[in-house]
Structures are given as C-alpha cells and as structure tokens.
Amino acid sequence: MGKTALLLMDMQVGIIGMCDPAKAKECLERAAAAANAARAAKYPVIYVTVEFRPGHPELGPHNLSAARAKEANAFVEGDASVAVHPVVAPQEGDIKVVKRRVSAFGGSDLDAVLRGLEVDSLVLGGVATSGVVLSTVRQAADMDFKLTVLEDLCLDRDEEVHRVLVQKVFPKQTTVKSSTEWIQEVVKA
Image (cartoon, rainbow, N blue to C red; front, side, top):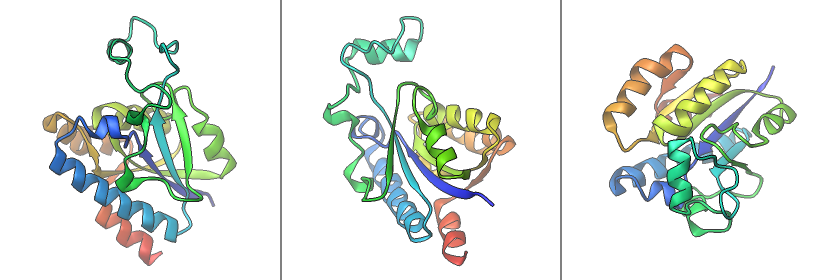
C-alpha cells in the first residue's frame, strides 16, 4: 500500500500576486488548512516552486510563456517573487522541490522524491489551473499516480478556463473535490 502526498504548486509571492486578491487570500487560507490536515495525517507536504538561474538559461526562445518570463527577468533564484507565500509557507519537515518548467515534474527531482517516499497518490493544488495544475495532472496520470485535484486550491486568471478544467477535463484523469471534503476524509481516516 502506498502513501498520499499533498502537492502545493507555484503558490509563490510573484504568482499569487497576479491573481484577484480576495480569491488569492481564500485559496491560500484553504491551502494552509489542507497542509495542516496532511501533516496531522502524516502525509508529506511538498511545495513545488518555479525558479530559474540568472539569465534564464533553461528557457529557449520558442516557448511563448517562457520567453515572457525571460524578458521580464521573472522568477530568478533568490528573488522575493519565488518565495512560497507566507500564509502557506513550508514548515519543518515539509519538502520543497524546484522546477524549471510548467509541470511539477519538469526539470525537477519530484519523481525521485515521490518514489523515495513510496508515494502513489497525489493531492494537487496550485496556481494556475491552466498551467502547473493541468501540466502536472497530465504527466502524473501518465506516470500512473492516483490523483485528486482540490478545485478550491486552484486559481486561474481566467475563471472560465478554470471551470472547464475542473468540471470537464480533470475528471477524465483525476478525482476533483473541494479541500473541505478532502480534509474531512483525512480527519476520518
């Protein structure tokens, strides 16, 4: 029997700051509650952040979103924008994984960490729904992880895209539920 891990992805100051402040606040508070429930259940809590080396050598010119990050000199290692938002900041014992692409697996050692921990079930939340969450769901499903997306721990600047993903696309590869439902299940287990 495997283990479950909670992945909180791209919940960074520079990314959350691009979202509607009221929605971001609610999402972060729910993410903190989910992280506390995971810790109480002895589930690993893994923070995935996107960070680039100075000059963005990881980013080629043909990827449009990467080109924008490079042009803006965004998300460089050590910059305040890459820090996990303080409302949901990692605690002692939590794991941080740095990625260099959109998917949580892209350019990171996440797979090695999950295999080392014998994790076979992932619970996901992140910003943006159409970015890190979508890319990670697709890749993790192909890697045979059991998946749950906590829809209220996901934000996207386009609410319609978020709705379509959590209601129509994700259910084909993952269970979608609210963080409240998941926390109740974790507490009962």
